[in-house]
Length: 114
Length: 112
Image (cartoon, rainbow over all chains, first blue to last red):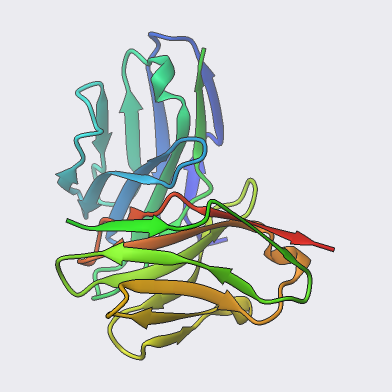
């Protein structure tokens, strides 16, 4: 399968702990995106990379959140000092750089903060 | 600023009858518009996209959508619903080549 993959698929943690998620995009895609989806809502944009450069961050991405894409391939999203409000599905997507290139989504990582 | 409004949070249809999922958008620029489907425990899958070419866009699984600039709408239709169409559908607007703005979704239920 050459689609977007995300690990882990599920994460349960206690409030105050740090968590890290990984996204592996489609290999030829140089754009990578993170979204957050809460129950009953559509996904909300968090941040976006072109190659290794992080080009935009949403105001939703507080200083407890950090995302990296060190070599322009896989990406990690870390949440420090998790809060119950961080419970959500975290989605990763990738695309090429051509005009109108659609984004291909991974299956998501579901985070539950107890 | 861009936004998307999906006018119905839930739609129920009988198998074999037409499907209509409504979407209105707001965009300062010439938008790209998409419809994605999300089945339980599966990733978002692209159904179709509008990128300023033909206003009637055909997608996968018999779905199509018509871009109407005067009405700022991009409604999704299918002539005959199938049980496998039951899922959550998202309308998406993008004014550039990144950063999707999603609607809140429409849950489609197909009755036997």
